[in-house]
Image (cartoon, rainbow over all chains, first blue to last red; front, top):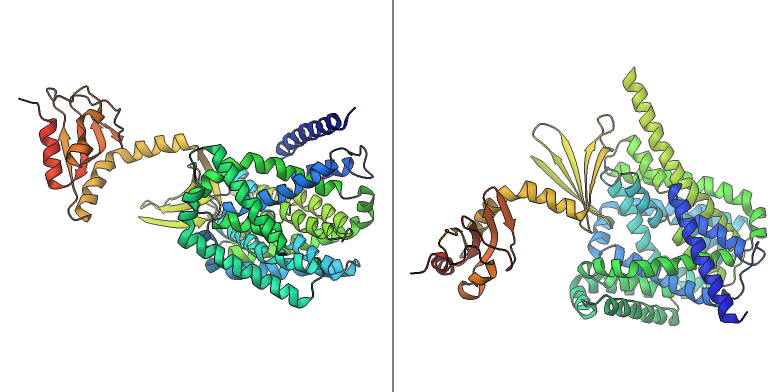
Length: 388
Length: 161
């Protein structure tokens, strides 16, 4: 068979397979991310059925997937929502960082990763999956709950922190010393503040410039601008992901709504490819030896996330059951842990691949299960008390 | 009545209404136009125990149902607040030239500068009517505009001759 035929066949089977996994995940009430990772492990090098022809395509598609993921994330929150969250829940964000990043850092160093790798692992354990958490809140009917604003604020602040953390990580991974790292973070911080101010003052103008009644026009302009800025950001060494995130942030809320709906399907397609690419790059045989370490790390950082949610919800005057709900729903790690690990693996720290894959696999499944358990336990307790 | 508004980043806005009877209703308005109406748990007042999910179409229907009788009242309040802006109610009599004709034919906006913001038809209200909406004998138009414009509009709606 010629090369194109193999390529198309492999891709077709891949996407159909992802569709089946998506249905399965939905049935079980879980995110599809862990399922996609497991499937990709089986398809990669050293897996059951290695995929070969599509490798180069998937690598490029994965880069685009990361850009679209971050663009969509930037579109998700308005500058106003960021500022409001910062005002009300700044301390929660700080607690989140102080509780959840150090375990990753320490574990990385103990496991013999270079300190750049340990820094990446700190990011992996720090950031909850806003995708999984947001969907859980909707599915479990918790949007109207009183602890939910605290949960969402923590997510927003994490996303904001990503815009500073990613450049720091990229500069560090590129082998820059502390000075270069500080420079990178200062640059990213300045651009971030600029983008937020631009969004508040001039956002409507950018929105008018980008807006069009035609969906095709809108999509082309949006993706074009995101890739352009992402490319520029990559060229100056602050990570393509950050560039795309800032584009999403700078676009005004009025425009973001349509942009999200137009971008959604494309984002889903390429983001799935991104997760596949990450799974493909990991050797399943390397997963087993790190499994004990992964489980311990997952246990510790699940507990620290529960503490984070507890703290944030208590600031809003929520009672103990609500604090527990807030804490457990935040346990899930997902897409952004994979983004961070992907950057580190690409920069030549292969040891992080199996660790992060295993870690995300465990917590993307355990997080949703845990928070459902807490809810049904609390309800059962309540009923029992009622009967007495 | 006690209405509290909370921003839900990435989701929308939550309103919490404590009624005079002491009940608490949570209303989450999603950014995409959907809504959730929640009643809170007696034992755990932080938890929504019953949640009604409404899609955008259903939100419109409920809003019309609850909002229609209040609409005209609200316009009256509005015109009181903005100096120079008046509102008025103009019946479409059976012998008016526009009974049975679309609203657009009155050319109210072009000729009088007034906006017809609602058509009251018996117990129903058509809010923000379009130029294609048919007027019926007995309808009452709610319009806002200047004093002079409203007078012109009233004259236009009267039977000719």
